Length: 427
Image (cartoon, rainbow, N blue to C red):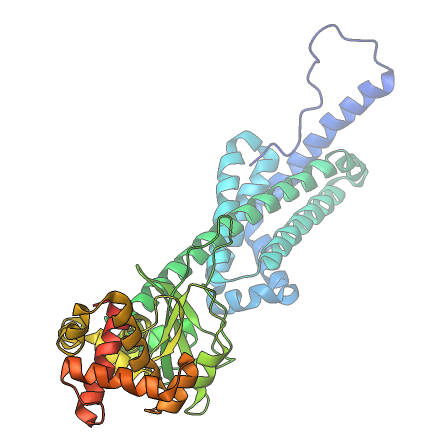
């Protein structure tokens, strides 16, 4: 414990200047005040159990933040208060002997109360209540022994209250350090839990605890969003790659970084079409890609939801945009089996590779426009700024080169998948 009563009677360094007589009287008064303080403090040390009882009762009555702690462990709180008073009152008598132990006690109290969730204001109020009670007992004991000596305590009052303020600072510093450590542990634990859920490695027995920690229903509906963001601009602030509209306002999305993408767990609470509305509302930055997987039931299925989101992300064009898996299932089939998709593309579109690249690209562009127009040569021509007969001529040429018939459903499906493979896989 710090030296509560600073020495005021030591000789200054160097020659002593002429000092008016009132200063000498003040020094004598300080010495007498220290002696009075020591006498009263020794009486307090002898009656610490009773002082502890009164302080614990006062805390229970006047500080709501301590009531839960006292109700759940009165004996523990009593020991803490008694330990603190013993070192602090002892510091009034032997400051050098008790300084370090008093500091350790105050730090321990700050850390312990932070871990228990007692508000810092309540802890500081408790320390000031203890200081006020000790001071009042010092005054009362001095008045009982010799009322005339009470006036001498004025000379040490500032030192006593400076001591209280010093230990409030120690408690606050220890409390905030412990709070930072606890926050880091909670965040780290949450990251591990979210990672296990997304990996599909979370144990069924741990799901209830995970739900409570994350504030999510164990049996709710969920989807996962995967985002491959564009490179951040130099100096740009770190954070989620994009903002999300609240699908379930009471349970916001949880972000988790991955090696190649960032994932968001999306709690769902709306109608079946809410994923389509969510995809339409996403404001994806230029160059970023986003994939939204299908909805799943329960936290236990989040591993499947992540894999579906990754499939949707792979089906997203390289130029960027958003892909909702449920609306791009053929593309999802292609990217789910790239080797087979590449083989299909080579089989269906391989003959076009013998053409001049510009000629090949015209045929591929016409095929794509015709399929996007649901097989309408008129609408495809409007999209390509050419006559419908030009479109039909190009399609016939494709059929001649590849041996495929676009009016045959099976051939049309294979052509569509082959074009998706070329577009998504670059085969």
